[in-house]
Image (cartoon, rainbow, N blue to C red):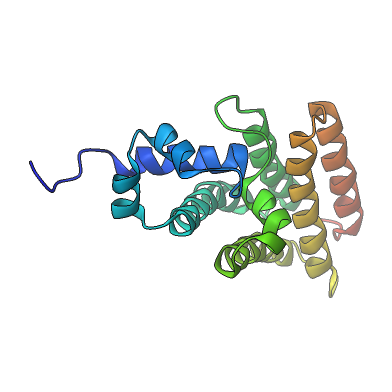
Length: 196
């Protein structure tokens, strides 16, 4: 039928997200997006707006997809804080090991490029990192850390999580990435109050 979209929006958004994730915002052209999605420029613009609007939708999609996995991992933090935080890191390590997605993290990549990106994109990356820190803070609060330590560990764990993505992009081995997680988990273990 004329005027009706003849493609799956979710599939097109996933393809655009992977293209941006693989090459970054600046190095992804409209021709790249057209090849990745199978849509011509006109369809891209009419369906998603300009390149920045499409990128923002891809960031939101990425943050929602992995955010729900992080939330699930941390959902038992009040009963088993160490297991929950380790499961949080496992979400990242599983994503890094997934051969169907690019190395690294779209949010971390965006945050590192923020100085040369538009303010809306930079703000969205900061917001996504803030949400990750907040979900960790909530989980660590439930673990009953000493005053002020939940926030400190949330900042630390967010930084570690993002560094895993950066390190994977530069070729760090799975063993090296696990060592980073293990050291952070050891520090958290020492800070947690003894369980009765």
